[in-house]
Length: 175
Image 1: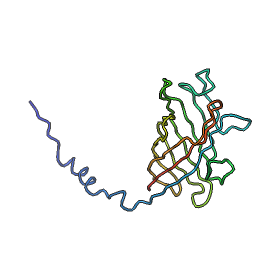
Image 2: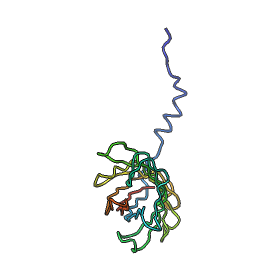
Image 3: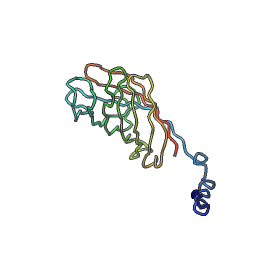
Image 4: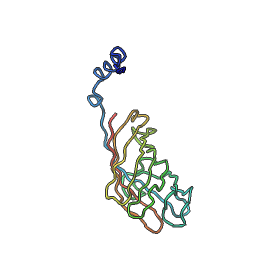
């Protein structure tokens, strides 16, 4: 019976890379961003459009998909100073009514100040009834190139009839 014995010469390059890899956190730049996202499904100029409607409900049902180009502002009032746009989509991915969850994939596109033209990419599960949801930041561009981190999202206000919502975001990133 033959016994598998890995060739140590094949493993040596892998071990060398693991031992010599630098500590990525040592020289990283950290940033904390705070802003509000205005997701408007109603009215004559919505910032979010349901593009797939599987359910007959006025609220989102399992399988429904919404595409967004939501304004980001410094404060919860839509008239407060602009920060950028949240461009992406979300889909209702839970079937039960007790724990509704969205799959949220969004690019936070910054349009003001030193972050103008830079983006952060967020992709994760948004359990909408939780008071605070944590979603991963999976990348970025511009001043956020190679960013990683997380976003904490709170529902600031929600109109249960229209689905319009204002979400408070705290984003923590390193690069």
